Image (tube, rainbow, N blue to C red; front, top):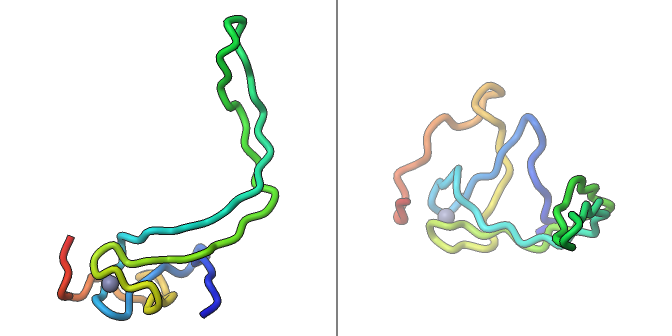
Length: 90
Ligand SMILES: [Zn+2]
């Protein structure tokens, strides 16, 4: 499957157990960070810009399914409003 993240109108859903809310996302990102160091030398990241990002995998937290994750509409666009009673549970 091609792994993509949902946009503002869509969301993830596990087609196996119906989970809508809990997923493990593995992604690798190339980022530019603005490191702001204090005089003691401790850095804090003031700004992060994502230069590129690759989604490697999406896994359901309930049932562990790595290959049944689908993208569905959000509720206001006709998508599911409840998580199905699956075999997992939170
Ligand atoms: Zn699942």
